Amino acid sequence: MTGFTIWLTGLSGSGKTTIATSLKNKLLNSYILDGDILRTGLNSDLGFSEEDRRENIRRVGEVAALLSDAGIISICSFISPYESDRDMCRKVHARKNIKFFEVFVNAPFNVCEKRDPKGLYKMAQSGKIKNFTGIDSPYEEPRHPDLKLDTHLYGISECVDRCINMLKNNGIKV
Image 1 (cartoon, rainbow, N blue to C red):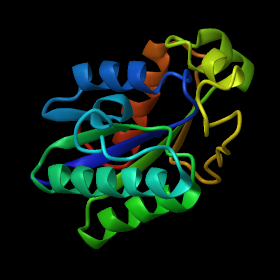
Image 2: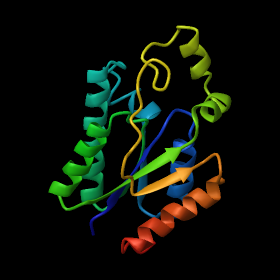
Image 3: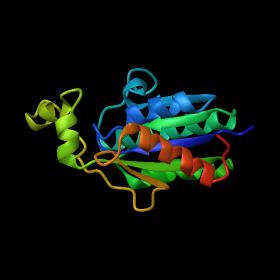
Image 4: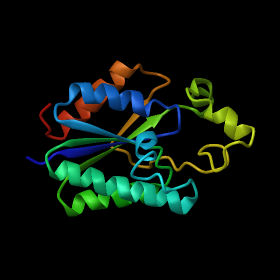
């Protein structure tokens, strides 16, 4: 059985990790690939320059495709600010005939800034963090995501239900 990948993209504080965790609880045989976790291991040699961000996402896209090819549902939670990088991940999956769903976890900047669970926005605004997405580094919103979740309008439960419905609408039994 072939798995598939759900790629959650959005600003820091938009709700990606929370949604990923709730999805994992609903989807059997799934694994979360999260930016914070992978940057402490597999991608610990990378910084936050544009080149390093691209390499971070390239590596994650390859790992997600390997897991999905082995029958595991990969739930990826990454800011992944560049559309071209997300498209590259989609192509890696397409070459292996693995389904890839891009989910835009959307919340306005001011909402993400208020949530700021790690205090990152404050550190970036004070100059302690450089190349922070949304402040001094760009975020390219997906033009054609498979699903857009407005987390400032809907709770986590409804967002997860929308993800499950997206999967069902694409022929995946969950």
